[in-house]
Image (cartoon, rainbow, N blue to C red; front, top):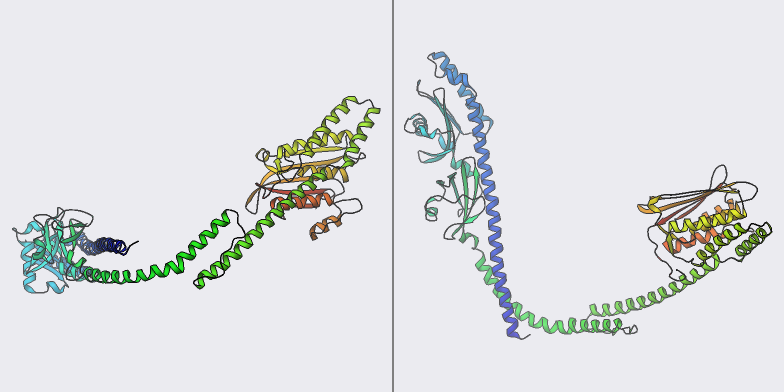
Amino acid sequence: MTLAAFAALLVLIIGTFIAYMLQVVQKENEQNLNSMTRIDSHLLDQILSVNDGALTAILQRAADLQNLDSNNEVKRSIASQNLLKEMGNLCNENTNILSIVLYNEKADAFIAKNRSDYLLSEKMKQSIREMIGSDEKRDILTGEWEVGQFEGVPVLIRGFSKFGNDFAVLVPIEYWMDQLVYNDGIFIGLTDEKGKPLYWNRANEFASEWDGNLPVREASFWTANKRALLGSLAVQNLRVYVGVPLRFMTAGTHALQAIIILIAIATLLVTLWLIRFSRKSIIDPTNLLLDTMRHIESGEYDHRLPETAPNVEFYKINQDFNKMLTTIVDLKMKSYEERIQFDEATLKYVQLQIRPHFFLNALTTIHSMTYQDRNQDIREYIERLSENVRYLFKAGLHTVPLSEEIDHVRVYIGMQNMQYPDAVFEYIDIEDVVRDYQIPQLLIHTLVENIYKHAVSIDHLTCILINAKAELKDGQEMCHISVEDDGDGFPASFLHQVGQGDVHAGKDGHGIGLWNLKKTLSLMYRREDLIQFSNKEPHGSRTDLWIPRRAKRQSSIWKL
């Protein structure tokens, strides 16, 4: 990029930034104006609402108001004292109630309670008396808030006529204005509901902005000549307007623009130096890093970054990158080795299922049945044996649906029942929701086979119970499988070895198959708490298994 192009880009950026800055300033002024309008309107609404309550309190003293119009001087005096006391209480109870006045035309009685510094003069009292007692001016007692002038003091007045009495509350506008926080450049004004101006704190300057009524809007808006921003909110039958002149909004931006231009020039000079510095210290080392990563992606795992660098940071990056790459290559080789070991474990697992003694026992059973002329049983036995062998040859460290494993177990039990007739009672209870659940192949078969090996005898009836249901374990959805029998149970030595994590073959070979089953679950799901061996009371063994929804690792070999 040439210097001219960079300078043009910098000017464009500065111009865009200044325009954006002006928009931000305008947005902030709009937000501040809206907040100021809400605060000023809320304060006025509080003042007016309190004074409305004072009027309501006076209206509720109907007896005193009627007695004030009575021909009985005593009643009038008592009523006057009661009303004066009520007015005093109201003024004392709330600082926003400044002046309450009442005039009875028949008795020419004037009652007033005033604690406002704005309305203390006798001329002011006389002006108020004339205002609410004059037929020509009584139209101000409309029941709504109006703006009036008393001895040059603008006030808000609301009054009623009832029982021959005229009474009103008065709030000097300056009392409200004194509680507002604003600088000298802010417009504060009141209009009626239609936007007709009633009062402005800077009337002369503001009058030139509008002809007639002001727009009635609930959001901020600009004056016709864009010289001021106004905000407006309704307060009862009045509207509060707050305005900010444009010159106040942009007063601080001119100096800021000059500062920005100076900063831009300095930035241009510094940038030229940074370009040269960054190319040497950042861009070139980064390109070298990217080039090295491309070599690695193409399979050149022996490619490394140089040991030297233009600065300490990239020197550290180069060292850490080379170490990380070496670690990744080592982990990848280790992963390959683990995969090979896993497949070897699968082969050993398969080999464990192909046991010569099982087939010799099967051939012995068939040979025995030939002498008994049980040809139909022989055909059925061979059919079940072939199904069993076919399932065994599919075995590996992979999963099958629970229903498929149960079907194989039923075939195996049926085949064994021909060898142990009427010696086994099995009960299998499988919830429908887990019938399609994926479990390791030969999981239940191994447990049932262990029962036949150590618990089943032709001399007594053995019960085998298999149950499977959905269950949460440690907050994870699992299939809970339990296999029970009522034999002699697990040897105490085996249960102790399982608890210690050290199982070795006994004289009868008890436990090795079950321990291999535990290792299989650990290998496939990488958890050590998925199988539990226990004995039942009064006798018998129980094995509980919890199978997660998905295996962490499965073998693909031997899987059909």
